[in-house]
Amino acid sequence: MDKICVVGLGYIGLPTALMLAANGEQVVGVDKDSDLLAKLLDGKITFEEDGLEELFKSAVKCGISFQSACTAAEIYIIAVPTPFDKITKKIDPAYVITAIDSVLDICPKGSIIVIESTVSPGTIDKFVRPAVAAREFAIGSDIHLVHAPERIIPGNMIAELRDNARTIGADSPEIAEKIRQMYATFCKGEIVLTDIRTAEITKVVENTYRDINIAFANELAKICRQDNLNVYEIIKIANMHPRVAILQPGPGVGGHCISVDPWFLVGDYPQLSLLIHEARKINDSMPTFVLSRIQDIIAEKSMKSAKIGFYGITYKEDVDDTRESPTLQLYDLLKLHLGGSAAFYDPMCENVLPGQIADFAEFVAVCDIIVVMVGHSHIRQNKAKLADKIVLDTRNVGIDGAYQL
Ligand code: SAJ
Image 1 (cartoon, rainbow, N blue to C red):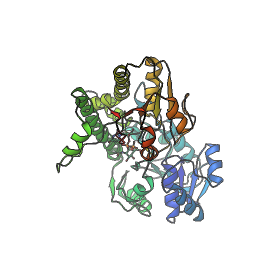
Image 2 (cartoon, rainbow, N blue to C red; image 1 turned 120 degrees about the vertical axis):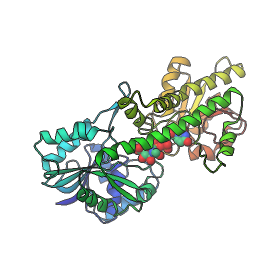
Image 3 (cartoon, helix red, strand yellow; image 1 turned 135 degrees about the vertical axis):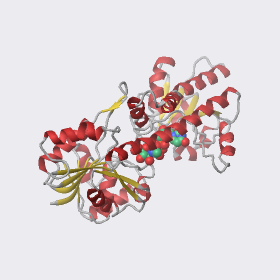
Image 4 (spheres, rainbow, N blue to C red; image 1 turned 180 degrees about the vertical axis):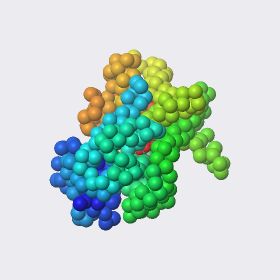
């Protein structure tokens, strides 16, 4: 019997499975996606992340295996996606439930299911427990449930897997301790044991805190624009105060976490989450604000027509993930407002949008206005190549003469 079976080998499941294997645990990684599996079995990693390739090699050396179906194990880690419905603002727990169902098909009695996927608070009570009970498994004896939400930041995942504190929510201290020991094989941060409900909401609270703080920076950018003040200088000086740490304004908040999780609190506590809701609205308004800045520039330069080039499609710098990215949000607005005369470039991803140009020099040459949407290292190293262009720099990468938010 295997010791640990990790179900879902995406952005969270893969590095977690590799880390456990590289630190001496016996691990099998499971994913239904045959292309993803084929790549892993062929010795290739499936997304770009600092240090992932080296970790992959060492996990393979230590004996990690990959397959499409769950196997008998002592511990199952569920790291499948939780899709978000943009209209209802609710997550769909179906993938988590399906993954748990496939575990229940083969798991030995007494095994532990650890849910790492972010779920909206209350999901485990509302959906997971009834689904397990419907299969006639007694929770607490036949099967144990744990929620250990991931906390790692794309771009620094491997270091954060090792160094961040973790939360483990379980029904009993004994099971929590067993799972603490598993994570302690690689996690050097503090591991806090609590109950499942607390672990669920704490994860969402962390991302909501960051969303609110980014919204404050974005609102400051709008205030400063009104009076032509430099928001970046103001933030820099304010942050010299020992108890001030303002984040950076930008073209919007993307990714599958910060732009999603606060909605769970708004949905569950609509009368009580006024600040949280307002912050979400401010961050969601930023692509429209970028569009208004482009229109300001076109008017100021008296341009009759202009080809707008958007540098960066991913949701943030140096990752290849485009989920909920501000550029994709802007693309939808552009279709309405600018009649589609846009080009896109991103060194981290290919063929995401119509009008995407693969060659940077060609992109620069064909565009009249370039809007920097993502501060990839690539643009920081190639700023000089935009010297003769009209540039709107929404990420403050430091391009001489550029317009700012
Ligand atoms: N952003 C700004 N200004 C800033 C910081 C970020 O506009 O000063 C934007 C980014 O460009 C991006 C978005 O916010 O579009 C989110 O990026 P991020 O780097 O703040 O966070 P994520 O989504 O990559 O990862 C977050 C992290 N959560 C927190 O820092 C509280 C990470 O630790 C979580 O594990 C992750 O969400 C998750 O999976 O929940």
